[in-house]
Image (tube, rainbow, N blue to C red; front, top):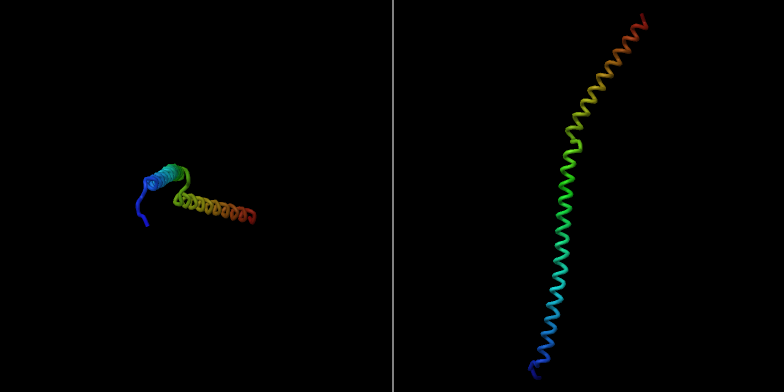
Length: 97
């Protein structure tokens, strides 16, 4: 068997390698563009999340604040209940007299 590479074989091999290199380059370019797009979207989502966290911290009630409000309301309701009880007791006494 003859192991000599002809110019035609060499050109065919070169053409094949050039085709492979171009295909890899195009795929790499497309993938790089997609990766850049994903990174850009991640940055946008990260900014949106940070903006939301800031808005939530400014506008939403904290657990501590809600607990304090609940305590004040419970105390006010208890005082109001005591006043109503005293008023009813006084009315009962006045009705009995």
